[in-house]
Image (cartoon, rainbow, N blue to C red):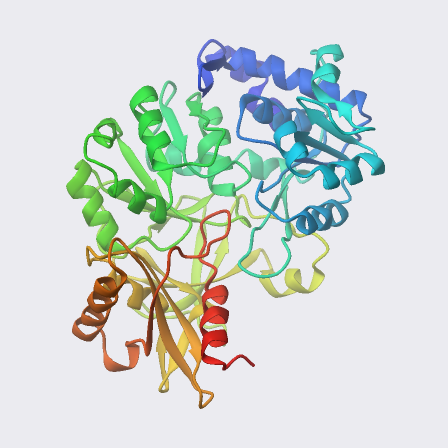
Length: 512
């Protein structure tokens, strides 16, 4: 088998070859167009000597060229690895060494922005640049494409052979490679089929980037699996551009993250008018505050549906069906997904009690690359330990409480930072909030709350203090309140709480 052939081969083209597969600005590719481009990309990689099972790195914007290259790697029997475009040069060096990749395809905008790295990779061999060539020893990708054959048969692979890796952005430490198989790739679109019922002709827009599993599934591979149209946005999302894109392309389903929904709510009503035509709004990546969902429903008349997945499962694991998005619910497991909430000793917990989520998933990775200890700890007998804490209600819905290592014990009682953040996010003076633990002068863990004001910082700080006093038990109230310009986040939108803790402890002089 070959997963790219299953997705874009003759059978798929017979079903919807003339339909629009990708829209990107003024460019529109049909399924037949995309199939020709990916086969030509496969031919180009073959000319570069790509061997079955060999990893290939892609550092490109979200364009049809990138999509064709990613699929072409899989068609040619290789293993596609799309790279986060905002990593450090040391991280790129780490990933190249960790993956053992010999071939790297970089778009010219990134090669010119990192000339030393491009020169280094070119000297090592196997660097192809898409666009203007300013690096000696680099391969001209577009010239290689033009000279390549476009009729290369898909390379046969076994179902459990790797098809792609995802490199986690992580909130600390080096990115780690997560290995996914041919079978995993074919699970793409589970939630779009099971929960939303998307069909051929629907249009889908994801604001996250394709190197992130959330967008790779829902913004590209999932739509292709059902004959829908993926709307690509090459640049990093900003509210003005996304509002204009929604108005122009009218997606059926819109996938984003809580922080971006909050930014959209700050836009003028006329700019958001086109969102009234979107059927489904979905959120993932971090806990969705109830206040944001409520404000979105008031603004658009539509709920935001919760979704939970991770790089290790590639595909969605839980989702909130339309009409059920109430309070803190994250969702229910999809068909084929089995979950358990376990306490520290391994026993399952009862309804209403928090536990760490263990999961069985049809798209579960085979493990981490070069991380035997992490594999032993988290991949156990077909189960994966997510290290995320959930609570299950009597109706079978799960509510995400946060990471197990985010919980903080204050005065002998456990506190979930999200509860503190939720308490203040309804205040109009506050646009974002992050609660972190910090060590006081006596060596005890206490809470600090960082807020991003919508206007005057002092007014926002006063509003935060009032909200905490009114809504939180005494042991949950922060000792320190600070106003900052923005919350530090990874490229995929996850809060980097450790940076806020370091900032405060440096201020207090309590760093260990």
